[in-house]
Image 1 (spheres, rainbow, N blue to C red):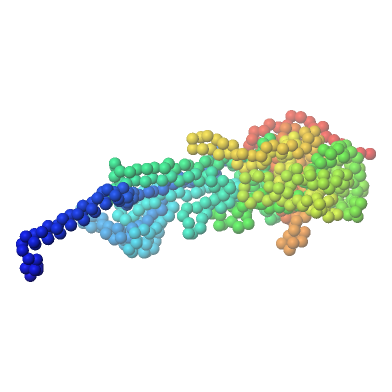
Image 2 (tube, helix red, strand yellow):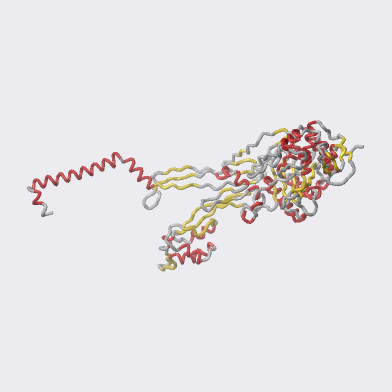
Amino acid sequence: MASLLPKLGHPARRQRIVTILIIAFLAVVAGRLVLIQGVRSAELSAEALSQRLTTATIDVPRADIVDRNGVILATSVERFNIAVNQRKIADWKRVDAGVVVAKGPLDAAKILAPILGIKESELAADLVGDRSFVYIAKDVTPETWALVRAERIFGIEPESTSERIYPNGDIAGNVLGFMGGRSDETGSYGLAGVELGFEDELTGTSGSITYERGGGGTIIPTGVREETPAVPGETVVLTIDRDIQWYAQQQVAEELKRSGASRATVVVSDAQNGEILALVDSHAVDPNDPSATAVTDRGSRAVSSVFEPGSTAKVITMAAALEEGVVTPLSHIKAPYAYTTSNNQTFHDSHQHQVLKLTTAGVLAESSNTGTVRIGEQMSSETRYKYLAAFGLGQPTGVGLPGESGGILAPYEQWDGRQKYAVLFGQALSVTALQTNQVYSIIANGGVLKEPTVVKGFRAPDGTFTPRALAEDRRVISEKTSAQVMTMLESVTRDGTGVLAQIDGYRVAGKTGTAQASGPTGRLTSIVASFAGIAPADDPRIVVSVIVFDPKSSIWGGEIAAPLFKRVSTFALQQLRIPPSNSTPKLFPLTWD
């Protein structure tokens, strides 16, 4: 520098140069200040604020699922995931009376292992390292977390979460569904049943909170604070009665042992409003551990599996014939063992017999295939199809469960020469157990179809209840026809194939069914034995359908399904406190001379 000064000339000249440099420097600084505080002040202030802001999600627990009486069937409980900051725990020490009694991850593992129920060596491996966040335990109860927290181990950090539990085990498991998720996602969601079908109502909407924090991570009391409240989900109120569901499941399990059947379903509904009181599938899934149940049994087969109904569908033919005026309950029908139609199709009854002189009521009571064909052939194929569709065959019921099948009902234009007669007695078409129940619910409700449902409605956190929206009621047959069919069905349980369905003190109406079903090879080697009934017949309150697949002790619905109907119905009538019948039926004669 000293060597440079002589080159600058006179001291005054040097002073001017220095002054110019200082002014230039100050001008740059001033310009920078103007840029920062004037032109870009808002932008830079916002950038600085954004670096101090932290946003956290406010989660809400999944809402409950309860039965019609408020009994909790599915709920979410508080749990904690426990993590470790390996860098922090490396510096942890516990001092007692000035003496270090424990320090670092290895000692921490000795302390925490018995509390968490983890092997000390495994836990120590997770505590040692250079990562800032590693899970060491998940879904820990609040009580366990309290014990961990009491140890005050620096670097052990909690994460609040929840766990879905089902207090009643497999009771209504196939209706409730279960939870799950993929390994690359956080949280879980419904995978079946109500949990899947009503995901949006149950989950609600997460909220968020944004706050300003200082350099040490502490919240600045006077800083920015914005909160978007979380919106809790709505409690889903089912129509299911937990106790009726439990009893029916127990009876189904015992029936499988008794008859050697492969599986069975039972549907119990309220005859007055279509609400499902019990929807039972054998081998029910426990939502707490769905992996313990075969994949094929994790959903509700009562709404997804189809089968030929057999004689329980004859009630549709009778209702159609009465409604169309082609017969009355007292019409005279000759029912031979074998009957050949005009297009050379031959049909048989289940047992060899002479020609029977039956009334229309008698044809139903004796479950005569030939008599049913002789009645049904008086109606066109289009008329037969119209009533089958009107009773709900070939379309889902809208019960509210995922995976519901609409069954199989081909358009009448596609029926071949045999099919157009076979549909009259429940063959050449397929239904679900729930559709079978719906058919008899229409009869029980005076000829009106009320959409069945397993969900009664939704209860908001403030207690407001919103009923589930259902389709409008639809008349299928007249009240007169419905009453006539009801009387005919009562004859089935008094003098026909369904006498084992009788319930002491109650009038019962119903129909037996036995149909062939395809076995593992595709051939008709299996049997479907069924009974669908209504009680009390003089004041319908419940409709119960029983479907037993491939029973070994007997193939007849009247011997297998009817007694199971009796046991379940008796319990349901008592559970609902429905009084016994106090009237005597006036039945139609079954034969004529």
